[in-house]
Structures are given as structure tokens and as C-alpha cells.
Image 1 (cartoon, rainbow, N blue to C red):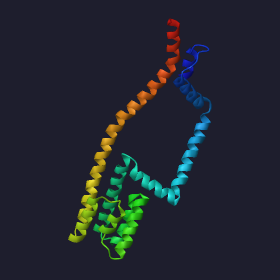
Image 2: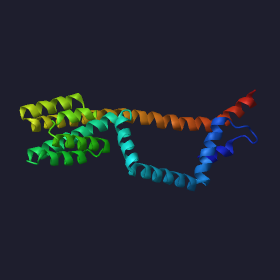
Image 3: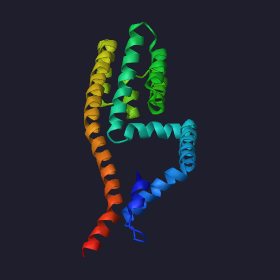
Image 4: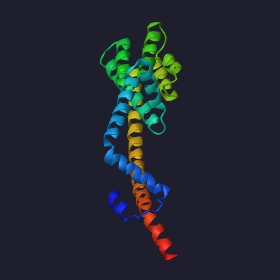
Length: 214
């Protein structure tokens, strides 16, 4: 489409800045497409290398929980997986230390996994489950309170199941809300992008017509 508009531009006319930007992007895609592929490939490779080393993986795990909008969603999903896995294993008669190992792995987040591992070590020392979870700063007050009540009352499995149910429902509600919000935002973004390109391509023509009219 862009080359067609270029043929319509007045010969020797000075092109506006927005038009030059659109033309530059178009030319780079048409004639230097290989540079885009190489650049994107390098970015993907570098990101993979960054998140596969221990420090990078830990940083990535922390960022996933802190990113706006999606961070809280992933955090709640992680807590739900932890509670669901732990309750299922304990209900099946698996010892708490082994259950904690599996529940930590099930979260899929290195930051949470490390916190659960530290919790397991403190439970081995004779401490309660709720205290080290609270000290990690990664579990909500509701989770801590319900775990503490469950330990004291002997109903830990039931309360872990309630925690999992609650956060799974929260994740479902948030996912639906985000989907409903992203659809119109995506439409607006596409509309603005296409509209901006069209305006940028028509600007030289409008300018030439205006000058002729004067």
C-alpha cells in the first residue's frame, strides 16, 4: 500500500515528519526484512540466556509477580496451585515435608519455590507452617491466618482447599475482566495505528492540494 501512495506524492515536495517515519519503516520491512528477523532472534536468545541462569531466573520470577495488572493475577494463580497441591498431597497421606517439596515445585515460580523450601527447613526445625510462610512476605495475610487456624484446629487440609478454591475463583474473575478490558484496548490500538498511518500517507497530498488552492 505504501508504494502506491509514494507514487501519488508531488514530485520534489518536502515530506512531513510522520510521513517520513512511515516510509522509513515500510522500506526497512521491504528491503531489510532480514535485519528484523536477526534482531528479533537475538533478542529472544538473549532473553532466554538471561532467564536460564540462577540470578536471571530469580529476577524474572520476581518481575512476573510485580508487573502491573498481570502480576497480581500470576501471584494469585501461584498461591492457588500451592494450596491445591499441598492440600491434595496431605489429604492423600503424604508427609508434610515431602508435600511441601512438591507444592513448591508446582508453583512454577522460583521465588515462591525458594520461599517454600525455606519454610520446609524451618518446619523440620519444629516451627509451625504459618510462621515461615509469613516471614517470606509472599503469601497474603488471609493465607497465613487460615494456615495458622488449620494447624491449630487440625483442619489444615480443609482450609488449604478453601484457600485454593478462593484464589482459583479470583483468578477466573480477573481473567474474564482482563479479557473484557483488553479487547476494546486492542481495537483502539489497531485503529489508532492504522489511522495514524493513513493520515501520515495522506499529509503530503493534502499539503499539495492546499498549496495549489492558495
